[in-house]
Each structure stands twice: as structure tokens, then as C-alpha cells.
Amino acid sequence: GENVEQHPSTLSVQEGDSAVIKCTYSDSASNYFPWYKQELGKRPQLIIDIRSNVGEKKDQRIAVTLNKTAKHFSLHITETQPEDSAVYFCAALGYGQNFVFGPGTRLSVLP
Amino acid sequence: KAGVTQTPRYLIKTRGQQVTLSCSPISGHRSVSWYQQTPGQGLQFLFEYFSETQRNKGNFPGRFSGRQFSNSRSEMNVSTLELGDSALYLCASSLVGGVAYNEQFFGPGTRLTVL
Image (cartoon, rainbow over all chains, first blue to last red; front, top):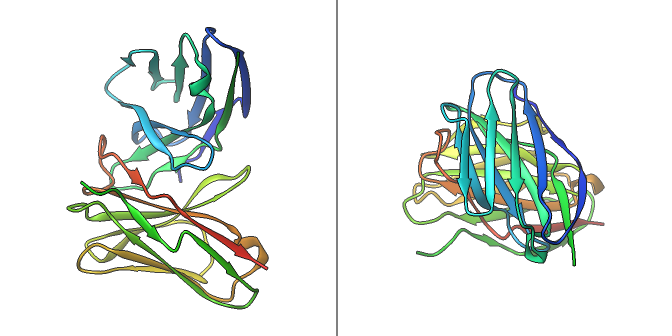
């Protein structure tokens, strides 16, 4: 079955700097890769996603890149703000399968 | 449109007891997935129901079971509770599930504590 690894497990950046979180997946049949943000005490919420036929997608300060050959995808957050502090989860999905989540990255944006 | 709701929000049980958690998906959503979230373990997939049928199942013991009703509401049952079952149980609904861009919307979760 699918296995998703995520690095780093914790990340601290200064406000205004960029943050990058990387995930690798094992099943080449996976074709959809969402990223979720979970603030303390709240439910996970989708922030951006990408399909396997696209190499990059951007939405304001966040972007996701996908390398199908290497089976890895990354979340990029630019101009980080304190409200970006949260746990971020990547996930992979194959057609008709269930989502497999990475273990999460705790991002702290320091003022 | 109302979001995904879960009841109860908090639950305290003792070892050996059983528990039933409930999830009401967004209206029109037919897929409901359940996850166990523990510190350091991320979101572990339990099972997914679609149109009252279990479509996918994770690697959890048979003590964990679920079902889905005709209105898409879903219940999860854990029998013979163990201390290690203490966790946040999240459900998520989507229109059909298993398809790209079929966003999952999470409920607030049920915090289960086993003493």
C-alpha cells in the first residue's frame, strides 16, 4: 500500500522568511496530493492541492510542486506570518483508494 | 451549508467498555472516512464508507467497526477499549471520495480518553 513520509517534523522560521515542507510517496499510481493545515485545537483544513498531471500550483503565498519521477511533492510558504503557525499534513490518494497522510510538520513562525 | 458534525465531542471511558461515535456529513456528501489522530502518529485511516458500503479499510483490529446509514450519517464503534485507543477521532466527508479534487471536509473530532 501507499506510504507517505514527511520532513521535517518541526520547522521554525522567522516571520517574513520562507518555509518548505517535503513529502515522498511510494505508490506511483497515486494521482492527487492535498495539503492540510491544522491549527491547535481545530480540524484539518485543505489549503492547496495538486493533481499528478500538473507540476506546480500556486495560490497567493503558498505553492505546491510535484515531481512524479522522484515521487515527491513539496509545500512552499513565502513571506510567512504568525498565523501560518500550525501543523501541516501532506496526503496522497490513488483512484478509488483512501487518503494516506504524512505524519505532519509543526511549523512555528517566530516574530 | 452546514459543515461536518461529530458527536459527542468528548468522551471518557474505562478499559473494556465499548463506545459509539457519530458523524453527520455535509448534505449531499456520500463518502465518509474515519481517522484516528494521536500525537506523533498523524492521521491514521480507519475506514471509508460510501453509499452504506465499506469501501476501504485501514490496518486496525476488528474491535474497530463502522457503518453508514441511508442518509450518509456514519457511526464508528470501538469494543473492548484499551488505553491505547485514547485519541482524537476525526471523520471527513466528500462528495464521492477516492477521486482527485474531491475535497475532504473534516469534522471537529471526538476526543476519546480511556482510563
